[in-house]
Length: 547
Image (cartoon, rainbow, N blue to C red; front, side, top):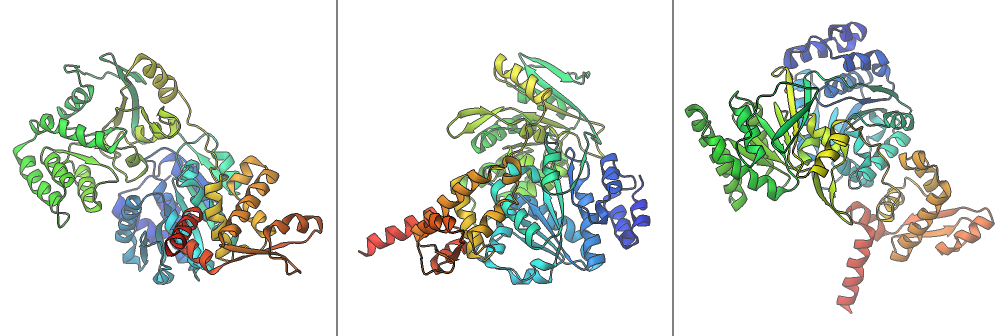
């Protein structure tokens, strides 16, 4: 399908299409993009789009956002999991659409702020945690949200970010009732996710660049599909050999390791080898870039100095511990071809879009609490593999796993090469998560009775998946008791003066409802984004100190 056809079908998007053609140099849509257009999502239907990396999910969201703004005069919210990705999308949308008079905002900052200035914005790029914070403070423009785009929606499965994302989606769907567009990796239960959102599901395994996935073990490379890959394993460090092989043809590599420390030490190790392959012109440019990296902060730290030394050699490490400005310089110069190798933690695979001709995954395990060293999920590995191959620059990309034993090699071949990604599951139904969000719902007046609370949670992905209303009710009651014990909420049987949450049993017997109200301190705990258990510990400690 030609992208011009989108403008023909939806005249309000004609100028948008011309802008996309000009900036992105797009004339033909990829098959998954055409499938999405034909699904009718631009007519306002909810959609879950489950396709591999680099297939143009962002373009699909842009068309929906601009149509919402231009046709309905409503806001578009673009939710991302990481601040780095938010900054990237903000710059992309701002540069592309501000010439149309579209006002683009980035909201990733202070959790104790309502940001009223966002009321005048058209596109708001935001993390799920920041959006949750805004909802707790109360925003008067919620009713003007016409579209919510959830990038990386499969992160509902994340124990850290998933519950907040799930609550935010549920709140917006219940109150603002916007169109919802979920952008997902190729997960196994994408249809279940779509059913929860009452959405159409579009799934594809299409890739614009052929991907060859392989394993390097015992100095041998095995790929699927089979491919002629000339390679000499001369050293005892396979990463060095694989990178050197690609440097000979001026191709870049992205290396994933399990920890920040490993990313830094490997970058230093690779630097001395990559430096010998640099042209005089590149050496001069890298010297200048190294100085920029070093002086990105007023007082360079030892880590800044280490990164600057690596950059001078054409290598960089990239993880959440590096300074934002430094990461921006690294990303820009890797895309431009000046930096030849990046070593990174797996977080990069979910964050900014930095494809490379070759992706090397050196560590297949990471430390997990209660488990020790555990294999990475298939979904995480596939996300890393998907970074191999640069659209418009490569006809193919190579992703290579490096198992450390025969057991790891068999596991990798069965699961990471030939296996399917895991299903995603809600992580909402655990007490530490529930107490935080239950307090927020009561403190922001989303719910005022126990029935309201149960009704809200019945709309969540957790409730949709597990269908355990009794178990959920018991968990909620336990959390309510805890919050009242801490003094963060009060409860009463409606129609009586009873102000004791243990009256729940009597209320049930009499078929009466329990009213829930936040206390002043409970409201403030919610606004400050503090775990109620932590807040109670602080309060009790202060009381003991004062006594």
